[in-house]
Length: 308
Figure 1: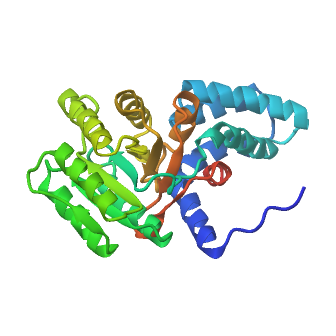
Figure 2 (figure 1 turned 180 degrees about the vertical axis):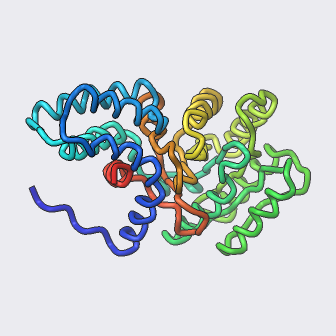
């Protein structure tokens, strides 16, 4: 088997940041492997550690079953070796989440972005805009979060920073802004139209209806759109993030996730819970506030960073 190529310097810097961001989650799992024996006690401790990391009951059971099989096949005798096998099991569980965001099949590719307030939605849109601009994509932003003046201003700042155009109107109807943006994106030959929708809780039913309306109206502007419906979730919120994925997916049929704030979280196992229950692709993960702190998700990298 050929050795995997070493990551380029920028990616290596990112991996270091990811590893330190996940240290809190990883260290609580790693302590399980400091003993001298592989026995029932080790597996019980590991089960507790995984549940504490918000891996969820189903994913934890899957990982333990798969791990025991790997330990048997590898004839492992040292707890330290079990840690490496756990990384392999976790990689396999997370693999369905690994999928690149594809741009270019539609002109423009219309991406609708949802998420609860505080998840880092508007910031993620700014980072995503930068990522797309770096890949020579012409982006148009739609400020459809018309309920919060601050959201419009924040998106405007990101538009300036990334030198992209923005469609915005004060106190306008979010669906109307979205319609105008998609129409403008087509007319101006843009590659991507990013629609920022109002931050909301999935329990706010009238607001979920507003989101569904935006989705319907976008389809009126372009029969094939939206091409992507992304949900931004805060990696620190663990099982709560999973509940959000369920609710938004039921309402909007999500196509991808952006997981933010994985720096300093003790709940990094939530990605395993998502993989087990709603394997929606994780296009990007974030470990900080800087523009370059949003990167594409790689299952093996994540598993290795998580388990140190």
